[in-house]
Length: 257
Image (cartoon, rainbow, N blue to C red; front, side, top):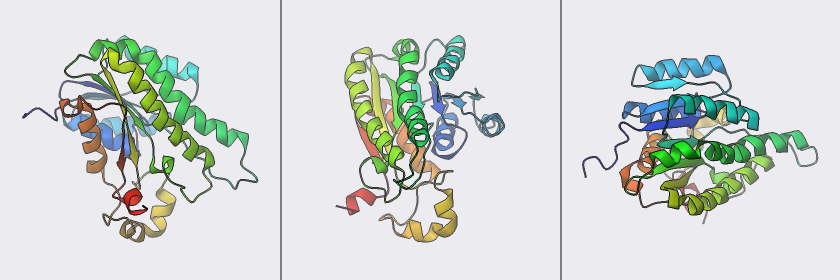
């Protein structure tokens, strides 16, 4: 039981790992002994995060553009040159777009759907050999897809493609889990509520204290909340859990009825 929540010695990949929830999860893995690859499009920011995390453990930065299949294949090819097995894949990279419905552009729809839905699917597809190699009956390989509470409730904003994409991620998680369980790969999701990130910065800058007070738990999410949930889903403790998306929202949706 003492190693029930251990990820030590595992190889992890976190997309969108240079900031926000991705960086929080990556730090949790690194500090707990997992060799962790992070990827993002902006090289300088990515290298800065990898440098900080490398002081805590093993963190490697690989820049990529995951919005296209070509970029996904280039990233996964480099990973597979370095690693024959991957124990953990966290599909966190994402985008959002806000525009009133009368003016919402096709480009805003396609950009969000490509990165939030298409990218996770093809990353799993391309990394299947390495995930299959890592999985075993007692401790399967893990995929975590990052969704959002916007998948479950009207966000009250004009981010139509974002909420639709995150709902698609929840269903994709179920579907992949059912198909890959036979390969000893568990697929689960996390649907975060309000955490500090680039996407939420505009709102938190205006009234972080007030927004935290409106959450039943009385605060916004912290790095420990994100990392702890991911570590549970990637450790022996969750080996019998697959196909589910955990709500990580401080009670917001439960309070909404």
